[in-house]
Image 1 (cartoon, rainbow, N blue to C red):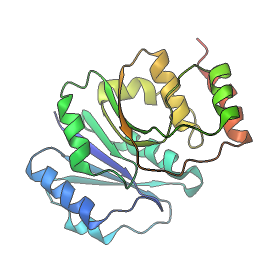
Image 2: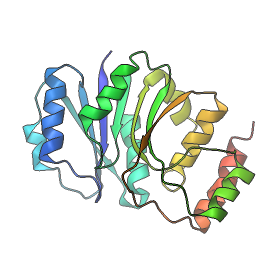
Image 3: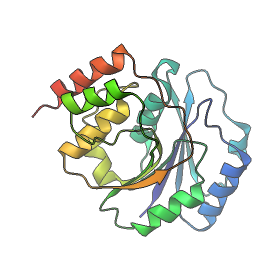
Amino acid sequence: MQTSLIIPLSKSLSLTKDHVADINRAAQAQAVDELVLVLSENGAVPPEVEQIDTRIKRVLVRSPKKFGKEGALKRGLQAASCERIVTLEHHCVRLNDVLAHETHYQDLEVIVLGLFIEPSRQIVWEFLKKWILEKDLLDAHCAFRCLSRKQLDPILGRIYLDRDGFNTEWAYIAKKLGVHCKIIPITTAAILPEPNLKMCWNLLRIRNWHFP
């Protein structure tokens, strides 16, 4: 089964020499067949791209800056063409470690999610999620994802949000569809966005869109 690797580039995640080395090793092991790099609409193509093994198909995608990292990820997921999808979404994880989790679930009967597990200090936000959507909804910032196209399409095809709330809508749809998730806890500290009025409003929109 061929694999697409998606990297949404941002201020907190750039294409480094370590990334290139990991990608090239994965290419030699035939573990990655396609690299999807998502750039901001006016962002320059990283020079490191030229050092990537030519056996890997390279796809460059542009995403409006206003949609942020989550919007960039959404466009990368839409552009990926392989049956197996792997994403790197935070600088704290290495591709080799992610692929170790991914290959353990070759059939990908479950979605493997690397989630930051730091307890939320946003008591009001957590209360609103439980009241409006679901209890114990795992929507924290993702460090990586591993899933199959068969699992991705039903979720991605139902997501309306382009930025704030993308992960929350993703988690809510997956739970409603009965998709099983294997959570890999990530303990490295990450700066999560502070909930704002728009994010709270999005909880109501998600509930309304996916009520059935």
